[in-house]
Image 1 (cartoon, rainbow, N blue to C red):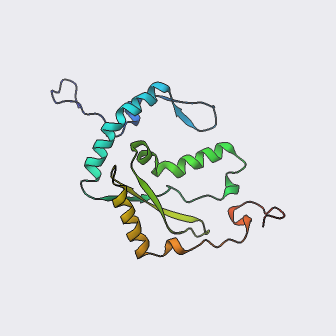
Image 2: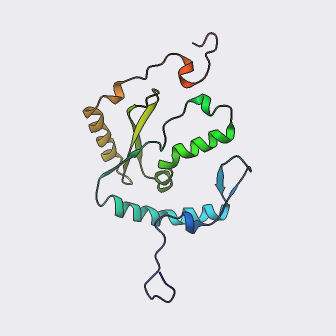
Image 3: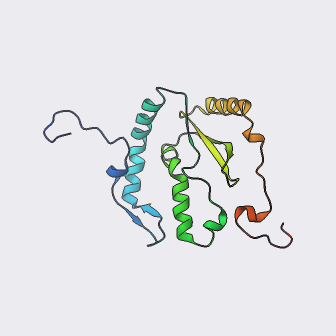
Length: 170
């Protein structure tokens, strides 16, 4: 909105640009953590963000469907030895959940298959605030219509996760 415009200024739809700067608590670890004042602003903004999200999204649906994680699940060995890589992978994995967690919306992850490598894939169902019953009913309907929750992954031992078997544990 241009300066001098008489229309009221609206808060941004998502607070990231508005909230302010962040800093890395441990340089080089890749984990960005908010400054205390940024965190306080995020908490203050949450009720407005929740109301806008609910009004916009749930005016068209009762349950929102999204991926459980944003990228395929990695094997443990790909991140086990490098803490910075583990933080980057975790950040990527949780990208689809971050805003839902921030808003405090109820969500459930359901199994929907496996990657070509045999690792699990999930679907996240997200409900309105205080509508856990409707969300769980949608989950029950999904599981009644599909069989994914009954299929166990094929495991060839601990090395399937990318870690070597230890004597006595395999």
